[in-house]
Length: 115
Image 1 (cartoon, helix red, strand yellow):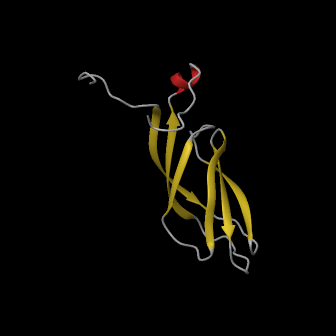
Image 2 (tube, helix red, strand yellow):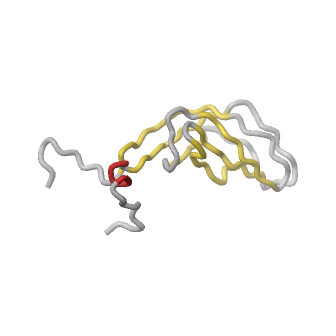
């Protein structure tokens, strides 16, 4: 059991919620479009989860990932038979999780299951 000054953290170095205002692009009928946005501080291999705080009819997000330092890519999906024009900025909550760099530097890969 950890002592009073120890804080167990597993293999996670950072877990932070961010607020983001993203404007979706125009998406043709029955297709996907990937758009990039600047999010200061995100790093390659960070894990992202998202919660869109509004709804755009027919438009969903297929995936969201960190594509470069300070940059996220968002795949928008239009599953309707009509084009969807990007609307004004939409509010999102982004959850960023970063693996412990000490473990990565020592050659440890992320586990594939909980043991």
